[in-house]
Length: 107
Image (tube, rainbow, N blue to C red; front, side):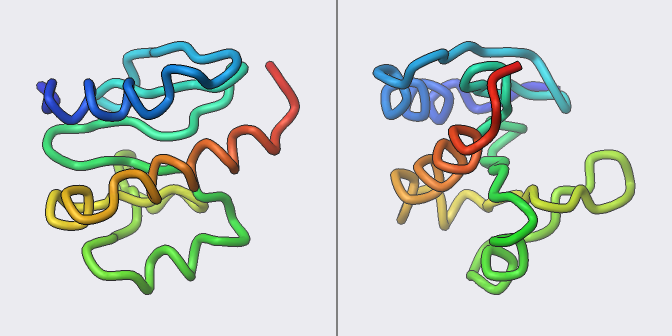
Protein backbone atom coordinates (compact mmCIF):
# COMPACT_ATOMS: atom_id res chain seq x y z
CA UNK A 1 0.00 0.00 0.00
CA UNK A 2 1.27 3.45 -0.82
CA UNK A 3 1.36 6.28 1.66
CA UNK A 4 1.23 10.05 1.38
CA UNK A 5 4.87 11.16 1.02
CA UNK A 6 4.00 14.79 1.79
CA UNK A 7 2.42 13.78 5.08
CA UNK A 8 5.42 11.56 5.88
CA UNK A 9 7.75 14.53 5.38
CA UNK A 10 5.64 16.72 7.68
CA UNK A 11 5.66 14.08 10.42
CA UNK A 12 9.38 13.49 9.94
CA UNK A 13 10.03 17.21 10.36
CA UNK A 14 7.98 17.36 13.56
CA UNK A 15 9.86 14.40 15.05
CA UNK A 16 13.34 15.13 13.69
CA UNK A 17 14.78 16.20 17.05
CA UNK A 18 13.25 13.30 18.99
CA UNK A 19 15.70 10.99 20.70
CA UNK A 20 15.80 7.44 19.35
CA UNK A 21 13.83 8.22 16.17
CA UNK A 22 13.66 5.53 13.52
CA UNK A 23 11.29 4.57 10.73
CA UNK A 24 9.87 1.18 9.88
CA UNK A 25 7.52 -0.21 7.26
CA UNK A 26 4.44 -1.39 9.18
CA UNK A 27 0.72 -1.87 8.60
CA UNK A 28 1.12 -1.14 4.90
CA UNK A 29 2.59 2.27 5.63
CA UNK A 30 5.50 3.94 7.38
CA UNK A 31 5.72 4.02 11.18
CA UNK A 32 7.79 6.41 13.27
CA UNK A 33 9.43 4.76 16.25
CA UNK A 34 10.92 6.35 19.36
CA UNK A 35 13.42 4.08 21.10
CA UNK A 36 11.80 1.11 19.36
CA UNK A 37 8.20 1.98 20.30
CA UNK A 38 5.73 3.08 17.64
CA UNK A 39 4.50 6.65 18.11
CA UNK A 40 2.63 7.30 14.88
CA UNK A 41 2.76 6.63 11.18
CA UNK A 42 1.18 7.19 7.82
CA UNK A 43 -1.03 4.64 6.05
CA UNK A 44 -2.44 5.83 2.75
CA UNK A 45 -3.75 9.34 3.36
CA UNK A 46 -4.33 8.84 7.09
CA UNK A 47 -2.22 9.25 10.17
CA UNK A 48 -2.11 6.37 12.62
CA UNK A 49 -1.42 7.38 16.19
CA UNK A 50 -0.61 5.29 19.23
CA UNK A 51 -2.41 7.14 21.99
CA UNK A 52 -2.38 4.30 24.52
CA UNK A 53 -5.22 2.58 26.32
CA UNK A 54 -5.91 5.40 28.78
CA UNK A 55 -6.42 8.04 26.03
CA UNK A 56 -8.08 5.68 23.55
CA UNK A 57 -11.75 6.58 24.21
CA UNK A 58 -10.94 10.28 24.38
CA UNK A 59 -9.19 10.09 21.02
CA UNK A 60 -12.08 8.19 19.46
CA UNK A 61 -14.53 10.85 20.64
CA UNK A 62 -12.73 13.46 18.53
CA UNK A 63 -13.81 14.34 15.01
CA UNK A 64 -12.23 12.46 12.12
CA UNK A 65 -10.91 9.56 14.17
CA UNK A 66 -11.73 5.86 14.11
CA UNK A 67 -10.30 2.70 15.61
CA UNK A 68 -7.21 1.35 13.92
CA UNK A 69 -8.44 -1.97 12.59
CA UNK A 70 -5.68 -3.07 10.24
CA UNK A 71 -6.01 -6.68 11.38
CA UNK A 72 -9.80 -6.66 11.11
CA UNK A 73 -10.11 -6.06 14.85
CA UNK A 74 -9.55 -2.74 16.58
CA UNK A 75 -6.08 -2.35 18.07
CA UNK A 76 -6.62 -0.89 21.54
CA UNK A 77 -4.76 2.34 22.05
CA UNK A 78 -4.31 3.06 18.33
CA UNK A 79 -6.44 5.28 16.11
CA UNK A 80 -6.58 6.39 12.51
CA UNK A 81 -6.88 10.13 12.03
CA UNK A 82 -8.50 11.17 8.77
CA UNK A 83 -6.98 13.65 6.36
CA UNK A 84 -9.21 16.57 7.46
CA UNK A 85 -8.07 16.37 11.09
CA UNK A 86 -4.46 15.91 10.06
CA UNK A 87 -4.60 19.13 8.06
CA UNK A 88 -6.08 20.99 11.03
CA UNK A 89 -4.10 19.54 13.90
CA UNK A 90 -1.07 17.48 12.83
CA UNK A 91 1.25 18.84 15.55
CA UNK A 92 -1.16 17.79 18.30
CA UNK A 93 -1.64 14.26 16.98
CA UNK A 94 2.07 13.64 16.40
CA UNK A 95 2.82 14.99 19.87
CA UNK A 96 0.26 12.67 21.47
CA UNK A 97 1.85 9.66 19.82
CA UNK A 98 5.35 10.80 20.78
CA UNK A 99 4.36 11.39 24.40
CA UNK A 100 2.86 7.92 24.70
CA UNK A 101 5.81 6.20 22.98
CA UNK A 102 8.19 8.18 25.18
CA UNK A 103 6.43 6.89 28.29
CA UNK A 104 7.35 3.29 27.41
CA UNK A 105 10.64 1.58 28.23
CA UNK A 106 13.08 1.44 25.29
CA UNK A 107 13.12 -1.78 23.27
